[in-house]
Length: 175
Image (tube, rainbow, N blue to C red; front, side, top):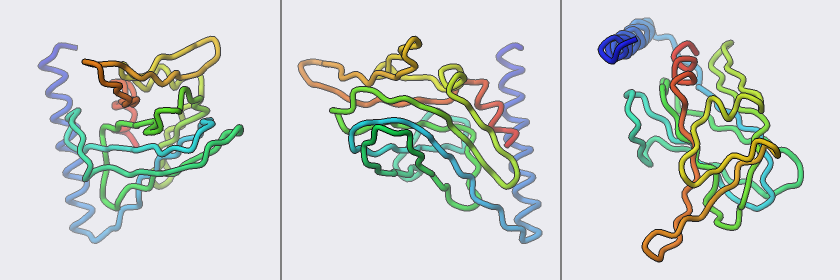
């Protein structure tokens, strides 16, 4: 598919989504919340942030973000990000740590839920549907995401996050 066709498809999908929202809002139907559930293993206390966007852009801001803290554990645990009502993101960014001592994480699964619809991403598909930034290095033999600190102009920078692959964006449009 050419770039122009892709752009037309994005516009078409966005307009269809907008129309459904307008019709539903006109009929006073309340949407449920979109919920994102991350099951993971992290040994240090930390917090994860979920940024979301409804405008097909890769820009994210703190206004459209949810932060959830957790205690480190030797066992898998889950955190739930409940988005505001009537918010239907087409893009997400998952920041997986603000604790520079967190050296790695394992992700067991990721779920996106809305009403009776669900996208379940098991461990073996995480690396195909989430795109790590330069602060994350995937070790496929141990199924671990190493969280890196990079030295830029003599400053240590730590900002590991994932964004959605194009395939995941297509799945999210159907949620």
